[in-house]
Image 1 (cartoon, one colour):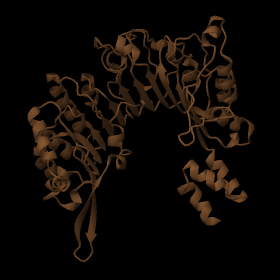
Image 2 (image 1 turned 120 degrees about the vertical axis):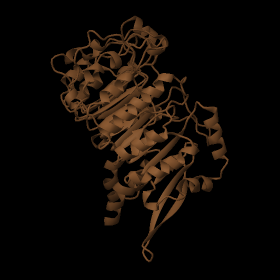
Image 3 (image 1 turned 30 degrees about the horizontal axis):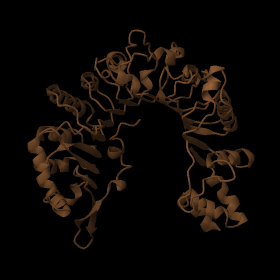
Image 4 (image 1 turned 135 degrees about the vertical axis):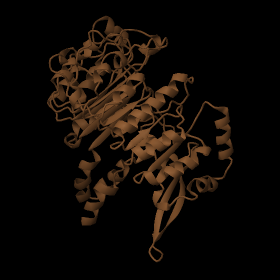
Length: 492
């Protein structure tokens, strides 16, 4: 019994394993039932799915699995165990047009919102959350909430979302001013424990260069009482609302900033964005507590902001899947940013990722190695000919655990070098890199940018008091949770 008590929370994390243990005996049922319902995810489909075994429709003789799951949470005494409820997928509403013409909400949507009264953590359905759900969350102890607004322009009632006193983290997805989104201004202004805010706008406005986003509609209640955020993230923001944009947040509390697809304009690239024309100017000097900065594009003021001494620990500039056209000014921007980061934040910097469109020279690599002794994860564009420079600088990076080399996409000559390098077999690649380097100076993970990832294990021989290395090739699944790979994306 003691063995199962220790085994359940540590090794039986899969819901299927917990469900089997629940059906073993009464004692195990009482032990594992709270763990089984701690995190619940219900997915709705806009069509009827059929079993691949016998061809019968799912939920035959009953409702859909989505509805039956909600029914169990409501009728059985398991709702009290739920700590996080995530609802995703497509929910089919009936008589939408008829109800919208008469100012009504479809009964199916009303019933759904009435049933969902437990601790919902994520609402990612294609239908809106109605006031009944918001009212239930006011009295809950929920700390994290993700809301996805529908992209349909069918008229729906717009709710003024009440504050949630216990809310710490909020993520809002697919905001489109033309799709009857709820008013979250009061939720932001009066949820005084809010520390982490992520807002993702629908990309339609940027693609069409449509100036329909007005920040004051979201943050107007924050005038006079700015948000005390520690983490802030925006994506797909396109607006000219600069002159009327007040101080919505207290920069003295900011520790992490993420800006994705929000620098510059839309299809015409007019250069208008509040994070380049408005609040970014007010970040000089940068937030005193800033430790994390991530953005898909580096802008000119970024280097100026980072020339002020600070405590930046992590900087990520992810690489797009399709390389943008090469710009001459990108080289000067790269030089300015490398100089600013290494000179003013080198002693505190632990993670550094540059995009593949910036190839670092031997001088850049030397500056990074000599000025950033505490680096643990490093990624930049390189060629096989740069291996000599990289290996010679490894002794100056004693804490380096991850080295990720990206392929530079613009030069045909450099691409030919990588093509020749890829013709080597796997062990020739890693032998070329580690040859002549002390085992104690090698990082644990090395990525050559072509899908080949190697794990280098250092083994000490007691009799000889010497070190040997053991190299294993890994796939992307083994490193997907390491920050320098996980954050090389456009997700927030």
